[in-house]
Length: 229
Image (tube, rainbow, N blue to C red; front, side):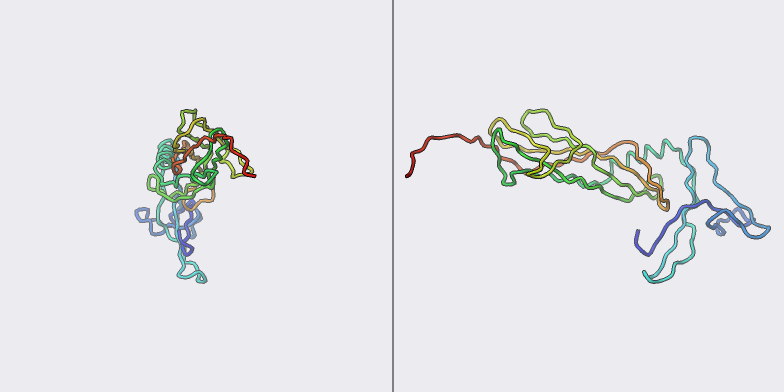
């Protein structure tokens, strides 16, 4: 949505005796004049009422707004179907996979030393359409599963980790090898219907997976050397 365009959902009245036409749809339920009647959307139990959607525009940021015009007369949707469609859409959205940061950042580490890992935990906001309804989804990373590709059990935490020296997530490799550390992030979300101020939770989660560049694990070996002095 651009800055010169606004949407609003609101109960609507059809201020006309000609119910076959929706040209008289206006924001609010009050109708002026004796000949007007108001229509309100009523839904069956288990259904969600989606109020009519209105739109107004302006030509420039300094310009005045147009009148509100109807772009969707509203509808009833089965709430369970809407929630299921939301959950499916969350899994389908092109969430950017979490970054994988490894320290030391040199591409190598040592056996039995702490190898530090951490990731970004910023939420992502995307807009989409669910059952014909415009929706904004705010996805937040809530769980992080690190697989160090060395036979150890993956490490799952709600902590995204931090860089040295305040690191909170690390792993110690026990043998020399080339390792590929991967991260699976679990996302939960809230959603907002176009034109409404309320955020509600989305049922279900989404996951993304990302892999760091190959990491070479070396073993440090002590050697006796002659004193050069």
